[in-house]
Each structure stands twice: as structure tokens, then as C-alpha cells.
Image (cartoon, rainbow, N blue to C red; front, side, top):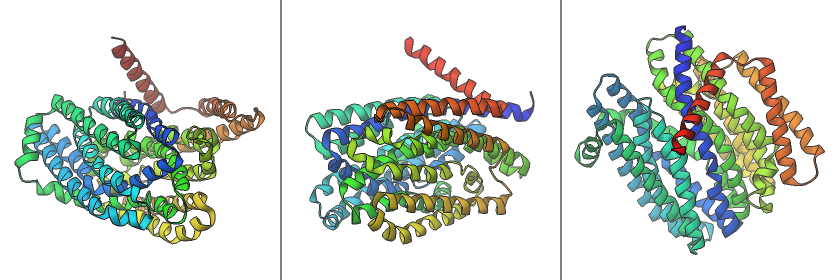
Length: 504
């Protein structure tokens, strides 16, 4: 077997486990459904507004320690020094906890002013409580990223794919039925993230000395190299997170909590498009830096195109689902959420552009993150200009237009930087084949949708089923690349292994 084929097969093995994690996380919307169904659309809008404030600041809590941890642990592991890997992880934990506490305190102080601005005193306490959530979430992330840097992907599946969504759903259900309201749901979120962090720490201890990491986090000075690497990512992360929040803020300013809730429901679905790309991130982070170090442009291009094609195989059918069959997806939240159907279709197209931005990793891992920051800033500026124009006139559809257009603009700028600086792009004939198959599925699926009886569940499942069959048939007819077959086989093998383990 040739070296490129060997590399593709190794990448497929890692991606296969991450695909299982993505599929398991498909249960996450069930937690959101609990809020909308049992507490009502207004309460769901209140919760959505709280998350829209906390989530953008979550990037400050992480402080770029995801990238710093990946690099430090992978280098230490390559040199056979698990203690150094544990110390690097401990230093990252210290940064994450310190920055998370600081951000939570700032939100707690600002909460009364935010509630007064919104004319909603009920916003203050849930916001203060939810501000603690990023600490537990990112502590778990540091532990899991460290194990992924060793190319051990199974722990992320167990912690984030199974344990976290199930515990979150159970705790939120209990809080709602015990009369905790939105405040109880926020407490459930904080508890679920904290428990996930504990489990992630135990998993980390199977690969590295956990005691060394915890002692470093508790009392050792932070490695300045970690801070130097992570600091530039803070600005980038903040810009990216603000991109996803300013549209909700605009809706909160000019529209009601009902509109905020419906728009948040749209975001819950389309976020899976970015999660598809994140599924491939551990493999990209572990494989790309050596290729960049060798300055092998041909190898980098081949790798990026392969990864981009793999992302498209999953992201494009999801885009078809969201853009073509949004009625069924939003109907599960409640009939009032159907006002978001056009917005869901528009957001799906914008988020697809973000999912296919795999070449951006060349900038992030090549020490050129500032160019990604500039690209993100172009999107943010576009949104800040267009939202006050579009939202008062068109409501959630206007917010979706501003967001999706900004994302497409941002990715075009970022792709331009990647090509000019590194002569790398993600386009290929294989990518065009995937796009053609997805378009065929959308057209035929919508025709079937229109021909079925006018009941949303019947139309949804019938149309989606037809679209899926046409998509797969078109892929086979156009010709699957051997790499895609490797990914599919790896995912199936991991699924069979998991089923066997669960039966035992």
C-alpha cells in the first residue's frame, strides 16, 4: 500500500470514532425540546438570550488552550515524555479555570444592567448561574484534547458523545418537573458540564499521570509558551463567538422573546454543520503540522482536499435536510416555531460555507491565525452594519440573511488568504461530485415532499427518505473515492465494536 493510501487509512480510523461522537450528539436537541415544550416559547427565548451572552465570552475562558494543549501534548508524546504532557495539560487547566472565574464574575456584575436594558428582571439569576458553565465545559475539553493529541479518540466519544447529552437531558428533565423553571435548567447545565469534566479527568488518567496534571494546575507557574501560543486565539475565538451572538442580540433588541426562541431553535440544528468539521479537527491537528513543517505544498493540498471532501460528504446532506425540510425539524419544538423555516434554510447555506473551510487550518496551524481573525472581523462588521437594517424589517429572516451573508463573506476572505499565503485550497472534482449528489437529493426530495399528503410528519419523513436514497445513489453513480470507502468502513467497524461492548 502506498504512503498516501496508508495515511488516508490512518486518518479514516481516527475520523471513524469522531463520526460516532457526532452521531451520538444528535440527541442534544432533545434537551432544548424539553424547555420549549414544558416551559413554553417565552421561557425558551429567555434561556436562549442567556446562552447568547455567555457563549461568546466562552472563548475567553478557553484562552486558546485547545491549540496550545494539542501542540504541547503531541510533541511530548512523540518524545515519549508523558510527565511533560501532563504538566502542559495542568498549565492549560490553570489558565482555563482562572479565566473562567474572571469571566463569570464579570457577567455576574453586569447581569443587573443587562436585565435592566432588556426590561426583564427574570434574566439576571439564570444569567449569573449559566456563566459558570464554560468552566466545567472547557476543563473537560482540555483533558479530552490532550488524549486526542495522542490520537486516542474514544474518550471524547464516551464523554461528549454519550455521557454529557444523556446526563444533561436527565438533569434538565428533573429540574423542569420539580418546578425549577429556567433557573433549574441552567443549574442542570452547569452540573452536567461539571460531571463531564470529572469523567474526562478520569479518562485522561488512563493515558497520562493525572496527579502531575492536577498538581501543576494547583501550584506550578504557568508555562509562558502556552500563553504566547494561546493568546492570539483569544481574539479569534471572541470574534467567531460574537459572529454567532450579535444576530440574537439584535432580535432581542428589536423583536420579542418568541422570535429569539424560534431563531435559537434554528441555530441548534445548523450548528451540527460546524460540528461535522470539528469531527475531523483532531486528525487535522495531529497530521497537518508536520506537513507544513516540511513545506510540502503538494502533500498539504492533497491532505486538505481529502479532508474537505470528507467533510462535504456529511455536511452537504445535512444542509439539504435543513434547507429543504425545515418544517419537520422546527415542528418538534412547537407549531409557533415554524416562523423560522425560511431562516433555517438561509442559515444552513451560510453554515455550509463555514463547514467547508478546512483550508483555514493551514492558517491556524501555520502561525498565521491573525488572517483568520481578519476574515472573522469582516463578517462581524458586515453583521453590525446589516442587522439594524434587516432585523426591524424582516425579523428572524433578516437576522439569518445578515448572518449567512457574513459567513460566506468571511470564508471567501479566509480562502483568499490561504491561497495567497500558502497556495492551498480545498476544491476538487470529488467535492463537485458530492455537491451534485446533494443537489439531486434536494430537488427530488422536495418533489416527493410536495406530492405527499399535507401532514408535516408524513411529508418530512417521506421527503427526507427520498432525498437520502437519491443522494447515496448519485454518489455511487458518480463514483466514490477509495478514501470515502475507508471512512465508511472504519465508522461501521467502530459501531460494531461499540455494539458488541454494550451487549457485554
